[in-house]
Length: 247
Image (cartoon, rainbow, N blue to C red; front, side, top):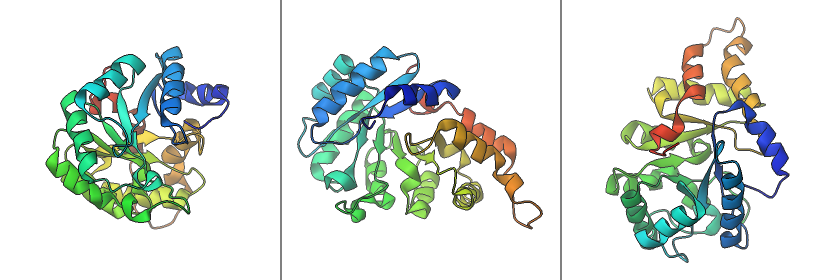
C-alpha cells in the first residue's frame, strides 16, 4: 500500500471481514515488503499481505519464496509488469509462476492505471492466457478488471478456472460500473469477480453502496438490470477461500 496514514486504512477496512493489502512499488521493494509485513502482522485478524516481486531481479526459487512467506507472513504475490517493465510471460517470470504454483501462492497482476512511463503493452490481460495454460493450478487475479482492457479480462475469466477479476471500481463512475457488471453477467462470470476497493482510490463502503444501488439509478430507463442478490454475492464472496488462503 502507498505511504498513507494507516488509521485511514484501518477505518476504511471496518466494513469488511478481511482485506488483502498489496505492497506498493517504490525505489526499494525490500523496504516496502518489510513495512507491509510489519503492518499486516499488527492487524493479522483483518489484513492479508501480498509481497511485491520482480522476477527479473529477485530470487524466485521455491526456497526463496517460502522464506518470504514464512518470515514475513505474506500469503501471495503482486506483480507490476507495466510499471516495472517486464513481459508477464518473460522466461524469468515463468520461474516465479512455477514456484508460486508449487507453494500455492496466488499471483495478483496489478497493471492499471498505467502512468506515462509505464508499458501499456504489458498491461493487456490476454498476455496472461499463456501463463494460465502453462500453470493451470496457479490462482491468478487480474487487478482492476484489467482496465482499459476489460473485454480481455472477461474472456480469460470465462476460459480459465483459476483466473479471477478484481472488481475494484470507481464509485463515481456509475455508468462504467453498470456496464462492467452487466457484461460479466452476460458472459456468466459474475462468480469470478472479487470485491475490492483499490484503497486509497476508494473506500469499501462507497463501493458497496454503488454496487447495491446502481439498478435504482436506472430509473424507468428500459435497460437490463443485474439482480441485487448477484451484487450481494460479489460483496460477500469468500475471496480468501477461492484463492486458497488459510484464514
